[in-house]
Every structure is written in structure tokens, then in C-alpha cells.
Image (spheres, rainbow, N blue to C red):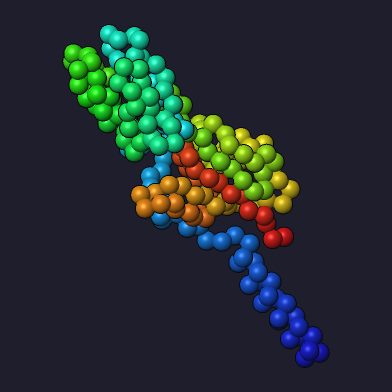
Length: 192
């Protein structure tokens, strides 16, 4: 009888201890420092973004340009322009400066993001891969875009990795956490 009580207490304490492992604590502090929510003026350009560059009065220069792996766009007349790490307003000033250096008198340039760089989702989802970013999306909508959870998926959290000022930053996030362009989401396998 004493042995059964000890076994029961051991089993109960083991179950409670393992219950805490089912969903780890959310760790979003470092990710929050990189910026969350809607993409606004603080969004910086990087490889994979497609930009609509409009040079007023110069229709032959106005077009959609892809940012390459080195953070540059190639425009006719002025060649390669470095825009990586800049906001759209800063990129417009950079293009204006290059055009003003002997090509166009008093250029007026507008730069808009035509298509954001993709996000990536891996792990316990139906279709892992690279997908087009949709403004305002959360981890939950990213899972929906990837055709839903796999049969053994942990459905209440994911691991999100994004580029920060000092390199890559990762954290355990709830399904309602906002996703930004270029993020990598890993949906983990549940224990039970």
C-alpha cells in the first residue's frame, strides 16, 4: 500500500513536470526590438524586395526593380544603386543623388515597395516552403498559407527567426505574433 502511494505520487509529479514542457514560455523580447506590427516608414529594404521606382518626367527610367543579394538595384543610365538597409524615402534620395550627378536636372524620385521579400515556413505544416508576404499577417495566417498544420504539430506556439541589427534573432512566439518579410517560422512537433 505504501509502495502504491509512492508510485502514484511519483507518476503524478512526473506528469505535472512534463505538462510544463508541452508549451514553452513565449520569448519575444529580442524579436520585439526588431519591430513588430504593420510595416511602415521603419521598414528597411533587403534582397528579395521588388521596388517601384518612379522618376517624374522620365518614363524610360520608371520601372519595377528587384533588390539583388548585395542590396542593390540596377537602373538604366545610372547603373547599380545600393539601397539595402535603407527605407524607401532614403532609397529615393539615393537615386535622386545619382541622377543629379550629370544625368537629369532636378530629378524627383519616388520609391515604393511593389512586393515584399518572401517569408519561410518549415516543420509541422502541410506544405513547407517559401511564400509571398502579405501585410498584416501573423504566424497563424502563415500556417494557413502553408495549407495548415501537420498531424503532429504544436498548435499554440512556433519558433520565429528574423534579421536583427546584430544578426539573426530567434524566439518562441504565440500563433498571434506578427510576421515580417524575410522571417523564418518553424512549427515544432508536439510531444503528446
